[in-house]
Length: 408
Image (cartoon, rainbow, N blue to C red; front, side):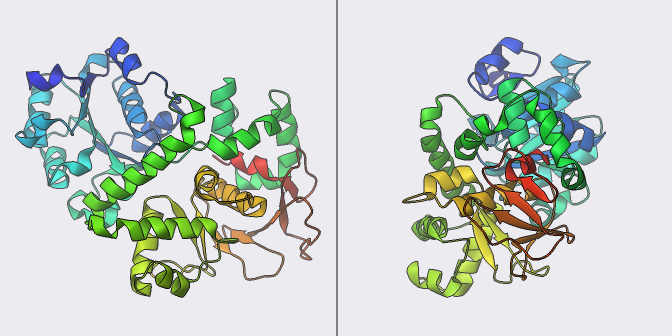
């Protein structure tokens, strides 16, 4: 155990100097860790799940600091990519660490370790006084694929920065999140209060380009880093977790590219299967993989869900759209993707509306239309919320679209 403790893949959480060196250049926002600590309560097994580039490792260490607040030397971060774990088990490492006084064990890159779920279940059974927090790829559906952990683990899903979190981080502010009901009834006052601290439209375009994912240095290289993380999701996470043969990855890449060129998320599965030379059933499986990877969003009408064919397929966020879209930006499409990432990541349910003049139905009771510059077709329904693009302030049920970025 002493050899790995000396390596740079193992970090005592109380070692402030090494922690700062490890995370130098990252967007250090700990609010998500605080929320996860509140959600996990006294659970001895906690999972931080998210896509690549979303900040899982940093949030893991931050959560360790929170959980070991009174005993900072009793928390340890370990990267399971270390060769040490090719000949040592998680269980015995955890046992030795606990016996030496450790109380919080933070495990990163766990999905590459064979049988990790069984060993964590044994740790949960035998070491109730040891809290284990681990990171997981967004592709890992713990509830379905790892029965050993059923009922034992609290899962905290990490999403990208909301526009609110982006403003808070970049301007050192503390805007609170709002509910959908508060937004609908009080958006004018909310926008007025925000405008006292910052001019949100100055930041909104930057957020749409590169604000969803925490930056890791030079913003001019943001797109390159995002594409690299997307490729790693396919080449590593998908291959390990879904057991996809690497020879099929070019088809998945092409499918993702084609989705990025679709107008308004309209996706013809038969056409896509022909384009990538595979069956309709395989295209449906690939769409599910890309959805689990949080690269795309599958939107249904009337309560539908996988394995039914989605009614719309959108890219996951506006940052991915920026690096994927060829030609001129489709601003109407970008507005809908921003709306979806803001509302769905806040935990609200979104369906595609079947009514003319309504785009989405939120939580079964809020009809919404994304209303763009130059769009003269307003919904005839008096209760439809218009999410206005290019507007700083709204009135009545006309709400500036940027305000939906304050839902989480």
